[in-house]
Image (cartoon, rainbow, N blue to C red; front, side, top):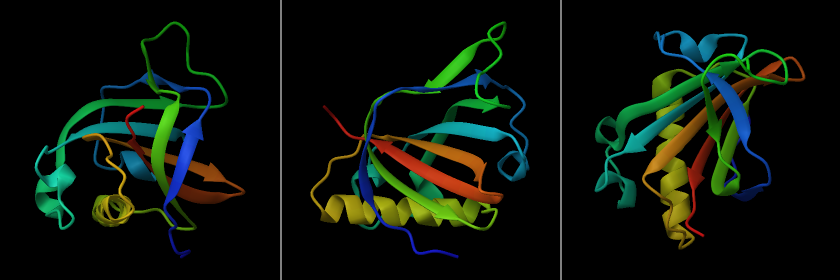
Amino acid sequence: MEQTTLMNLDLRAPLVYTEITDTGTDMEAGTEETLLCFSLDPLQSRSIEPDPELLLGSLVFAGRRTGNLPDPALPAVSLPAGNYLFVQRRGAVMSRREWLDMAVEQQKDGLWEMFRPESRIFVRFLHEDGQPVTQLFRPLPD
């Protein structure tokens, strides 16, 4: 598996998905592109040593798409355009615990670099070049 590198990403256009309400435990392992958005615990989201068990708050929304566009007849959710702390890992389907550990490292690195990420995280699962990819986005204030 590749090493993750923290980047500051300027997402120029939103990524739009069809909202889904069936958020089963195997959702991350699917072949369709999936976006999850979670609130983060306010205290843990500012800690240089967050407790992984307490970091995630509630699921704000989930979305999925097949192909390039969501279904226009269904409600949509999105990863808005904006600035983000961004990390990704390729090559293996990640369990919830693995991507949560990656989120903790993203937060530690971001705070060390003096960024002030917001208390929300977007987790994106997709396939590129025949490989699974997990991406984490933490919004940065304007």
